Amino acid sequence: MLYDITQPLYQGMPIYPGDPEVNIKKVQEIDSDGVEVHSVSLGTHSGTHIDAPRHLFKEGKTVDQIDPAVLIGSSDLFGIEGISKIGLDHISGLKPGRRLILKTGFKISSGEMKDYPYLLPDAGRYLVSCRISLLGIDSPSVDPPGSDQCHRILLEAGIVIVENLMLEGVPPGKYELMCLPLLLVGVDGSPARALLRKRGG
View 1 (cartoon, rainbow, N blue to C red):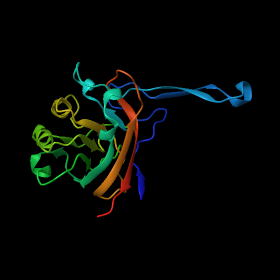
View 2: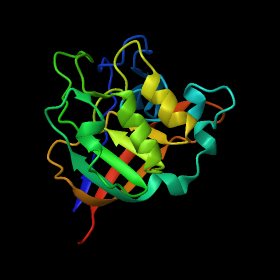
View 3: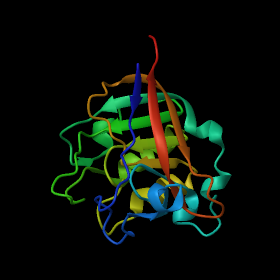
View 4: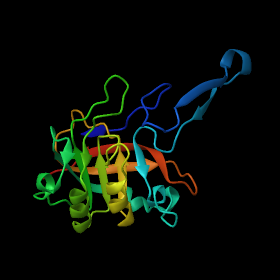
């Protein structure tokens, strides 16, 4: 079973407060130009996206410097629905492998990104101690609005963050993750196409 867990990108879609709007404009038409071409303008953290360490650290790796092997491979999906502030006591029993995805059950409503689940610093530090290389989550950010504490904890440890995953209908379990960004040179993040394939066992 293959699950597409990517948030679609479209004109006027909800974006994180302060990020650039997504604008998609047709610039050539088949009837008049013989081809159809669009221009696309968006932020590096639009939709389902990858945060590279450069997002917060001047000397951190940019998105093109992330080893693709981090973004492809076995992943554990855990369900923690109904928890708004994810602390150590909520995840200390988890024994993740190299990649961990947290399913909080968050859904964007009314076109707004607010009141979403996020991690508390003790949870971030615990995940660093688990030596994971990637953390995925279905909320817009691992931090509450106005904070970057967990981003700093995770990115400083070299953990790649994937946010805005679409996990509705995907049961917890073991999967193969495929999550590839655009090969944007020298930037802090990128929209990504993310897929999960169910593993046996």
